[in-house]
Image (cartoon, rainbow, N blue to C red; front, side):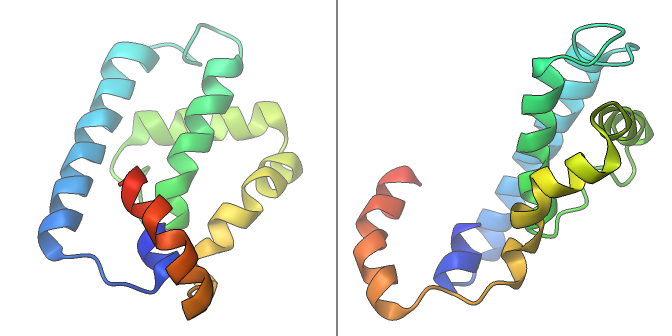
Length: 121
């Protein structure tokens, strides 16, 4: 989301590496945590599911289709949404899903935040 906020393009190499890492982590989530369970910690929704879905909605908000081609993960997402309720789920992720449509930060704000952002990344 930093490139969107800063209005800076991402290098193709950085994007490719980031998407490759995301793919590895999605596979790990499916294989090691979700396995063949309805939810991450068993048959009922838990805090683990809520944290995980929140993390996965960040790349979705950036335009990455993390559930595409992953039917097991997509079904889990649908179960989480159903357990939470469609309206609450949408409300909880509304800001992050609209982030890519926001204009970049103004130059003054960008300049003030750049040292902190660079420290994070």
